[in-house]
Image (tube, rainbow, N blue to C red; front, side, top):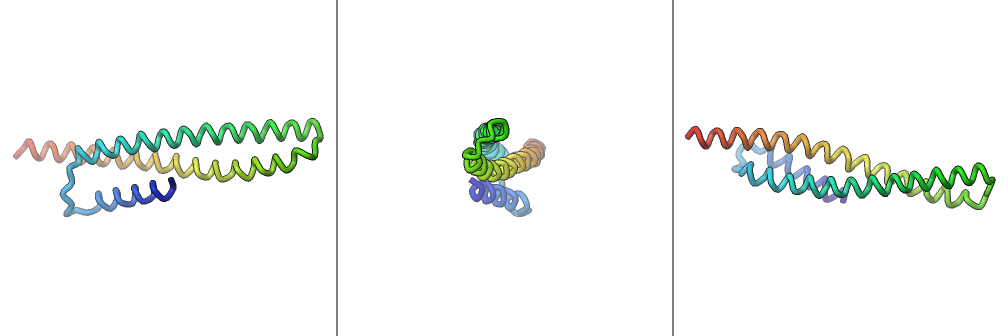
Length: 121
């Protein structure tokens, strides 16, 4: 997912940066809104999984500390080993979706200018 989203954002930014590109901003805005919806769903799923792993970590930590159960230490380390990459991936998704919102604002503004320019002619 990281590679897919990074390539999508890079291609979109390159398209917007090209002054000679003939872009239908209305169509681009619609397709970008669909992509934002996909990424919001992906972000929500990863948020829920991250929360569940964090909950599992803290519950296991509490049982380990209160019950002095040394056999839970490998489980605790395993959950922590999975939690850290989930947090990093969620952080990437969150920042990428925020970037997508800003790109949408730019596309929307260009669409309005394009529509105003077409109706003025």
